[in-house]
Image (cartoon, rainbow, N blue to C red; front, side):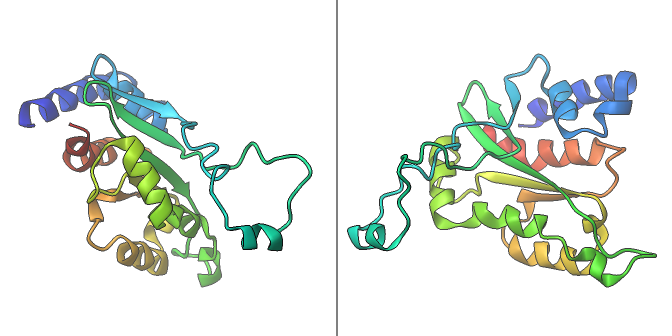
Length: 199
């Protein structure tokens, strides 16, 4: 693991020295640069779960009690923001990047009332965990997703405590990208905490 991690660090250092500007502000560009010439790839809006709810079986009683449209439902699912694949091991982790306002200096507490962070918790549900784990091939005890938070939420004293409690025992699976002008801490977190899950 050490030499492989160092290989990625060298790629990032070489890239960061040349084109740090835009890429360090953008999650996709940062990782696309990092993975250039490696076995890793990043995909925007992976579609493998775009119809995950269509085939959910309901009981006859439930079907009687709910609305049934004339045309069958053909599109109903979940699309994560990104997926990172190891093309050799065929393992995948899914990523949500959540930008949200928050309660920080000069703002009111009510400025932290957004719910993007709460919506990201859908991946904690038992059914979606099973589906993502199976497709990502990461194993039964691994969270198959990584959530990156951006914006004032990363410094909001209430929201930071919420996220910290929600991810208790899985601290490696979230990251507060507090300064999105600098991608180095984000990339280092990936190399140290997420990449080993894909190997």
